[in-house]
Image (tube, rainbow, N blue to C red; front, side, top):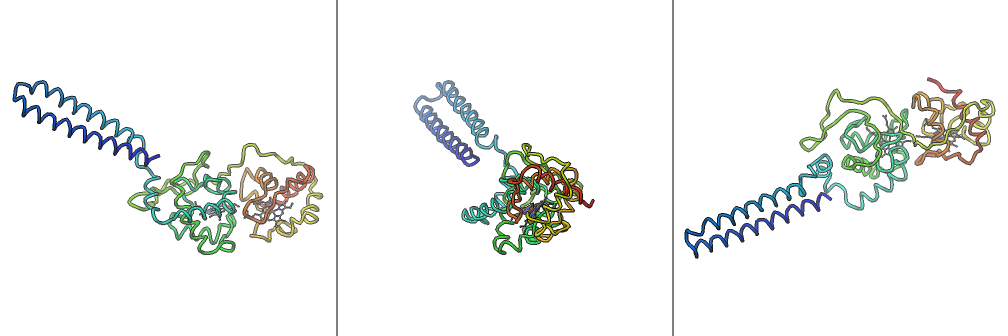
Length: 298
Ligand code: HEC
Ligand code: HEC
């Protein structure tokens, strides 16, 4: 869009210059032919030329640059230019869709995990800092250590990709989290004192609710028995895989933790070993939810 507008602006400017040049040439010819007495009439032509020049210039400005000020997107684009080929972007998108979008949103707009398309960052803005978060994760907050699952090159690719996302403006962005930065003089500058520390979870609005009030004992038996939850989460819910202890859900998600249980039980968690359990009947789901709610350690 921006490119099209710039080209329009340049074209209008070019046409205007040619037109003015043409009128001036004509003017000169008239002066040569008709001497001084006709200058009054010709002054009209030059005024007309100047007037149309001004109008075209303003129109050009409006359509060319006026409606698209050079914003964050362009600044970050210029920062990233040349760093990612189209193939790199395509490869990064595949990994993002498979492993990251469940928590960071289809377009990086944020969900359980933070929004990548704003100017707020929790763990810093340099490629090194972002690579470190992806590699080591923030396991206690629900971000897995992807260093075990992705190659070093892919982690770096994802870090570069994530740094291009503030150029985008997806629908329904999650409210910002973390420290505020501004992209100035070619790099991200920290703006102290503007941090947003609350960890807001945006769950889908149409999410079904699993009723509480099930049977804790039955839930515990399901958890430790046939369903195999305990294989990954430990018989007391303390967590085997990715340290994902089911006792810490309330601590991790605060007031929304029961909704988070609904969400993860019904949808699973894409990109992790957690499958969806929406094939279970409502009674079993309720027993499991009630059991998990009963073991929360705050
Ligand atoms: C299960 C959910 C989940 C998945 C899947 C996930 N993340 Fe995260 N991610 C999070 C959470 C939660 C945080 C916030 C951690 C915190 O609060 O410190 C986070 C934080 C991050 C951050 C730091 C953001 C910042 O503001 O500093 C980066 C970078 C990141 N994730 C990249 C990725 C990438 C790349 C993938 C896919 C390979 C991925 N994440 C998959 C949940 C997830
Ligand atoms: C094959 C391993 C596996 C099995 C089986 C499994 N889970 Fe999970 N579960 C996981 C993983 C891995 C995660 C999340 C990891 C992450 O988000 O980083 C998870 C996440 C969860 C969460 C969200 C916790 C949170 O804090 O975000 C709940 C709730 C949960 N599982 C419940 C269950 C229940 C109930 C069962 C059995 C019906 C079950 N899981 C079976 C691996 C498993």
